[in-house]
Length: 299
Image 1 (cartoon, one colour):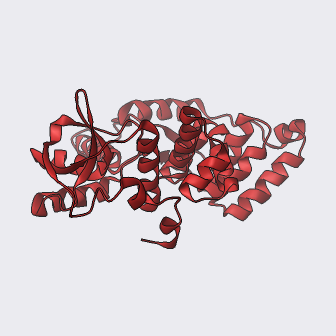
Image 2 (image 1 turned 30 degrees about the horizontal axis):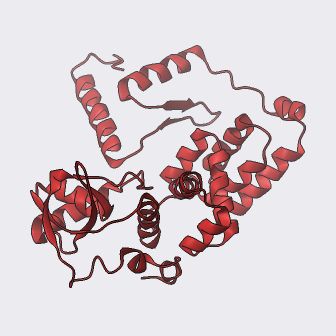
């Protein structure tokens, strides 16, 4: 466990009260009888890491039991969602589990700290988890900071990410923008300008320090001057039409960016499966094109 993890409030071991140690009573519980933790802060599960865990579960089973609490309709996960998901995907009928009693507040705290210790949360998921602790249980930023062993300023800065437009939050969630690149955007006056700056940062692959400098320049210019210097891009009607056709074909956002010397096409994807799907579509189009007369347009 790293130094950051050891400093997290009471620590996961203290919260779980030894529930994952070998001297506790371990039950074999129906995998399908367990519901996910309703307070789970993590929204994104890495596909490659999950595939490796599923393979491990198929080969060796679940070595470390999950922790659950009893409900009227079965069980709810307290800790171990990745192991539970992998068990379901591997086709296991039973999973080793330790049953404990926890309040909703403890469930939220345990789920948050478990993910933070394993560094599995992206900044937006962290922000949502901190805000959830504050709103559901009436905690202040200072109290949240003490519970998880982090500074109040870090809690405050992370929660501020939720003030950014959803588009930018998605960039941060996917890792397209880092927290250091996104944080300066909060000082800009409008969502439109924030998104414009975010796209410039991504396009030019700016560092966090360069992003701060860009934001300072944009904030210093009067709106009218920015509009004069950055007129709206008028795309050729053919380019717009092809963009629309590609969007329908690929089922995702597509941008064509004409240039003086070279142009480029940007195709958005969100997961490895999404990329595989797009490649399959393009491959099918390529094969179809091979059977068409020369000069035919397949899209």
